[in-house]
Image (cartoon, rainbow, N blue to C red; front, side, top):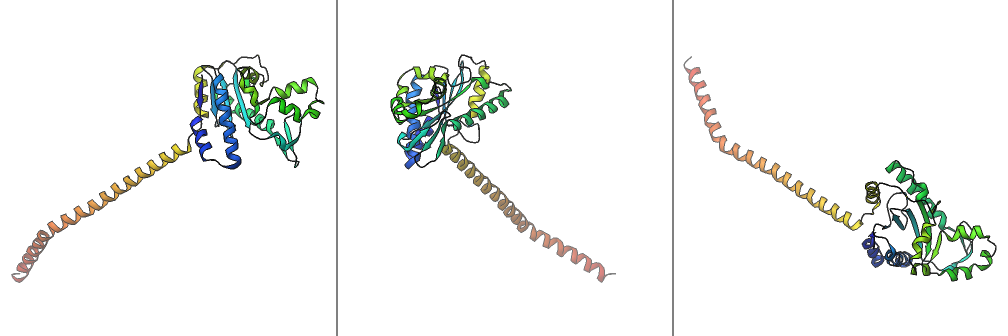
Length: 269
């Protein structure tokens, strides 16, 4: 098994989420549990990678094949009445869900991020796909049979190389199928291992709880520093006061002595 990053954060999300968010998080966790079984020793699966304006659900990295954006949808097909070859789903209310377009936006953002980071264009080694976690391939075909019958072979092939279903996660073949989601599936990737590790480190998500803990520790440390500084100021005042108290009698004696001498000379002048 390869490397999985972000699983603990996702599990916490599942425990804390409610409603639609909970359903989405559960779908992502189910995908992670299924897909991670097929990872190669050097492969990475990163949940919620951080590299663009909006984070995709997953980034799958194969050092030999490339980078793959994976978007998860845990919704029922019954809410849709139509789908087109570009992966735009139309709901019964007429709303458009541009699921594949969303994945393509992440794809392009990742390409720009990697190019700016590595100074290397690997656009041809970046793929993207959509996985439905609440439907099988047969259920999809049955639901949209009349629409799919109007597509030619090229349209069907281009669509299904980017769209997968829960039953397809039951086989190791899902890896090779996802490889088809890039522009040139047979093209291998040539990226220095150190550079690849740098990319992984940069896109790894942070745990908000950890950040809050660090912030709290920093806050506590600053409070301690403030207390120490205040004590130092107060101590300085106290020391100064004690010095003044100790010296004041001697100052008074000296003042009186000087005054007496001045008075003596005036009287005898």
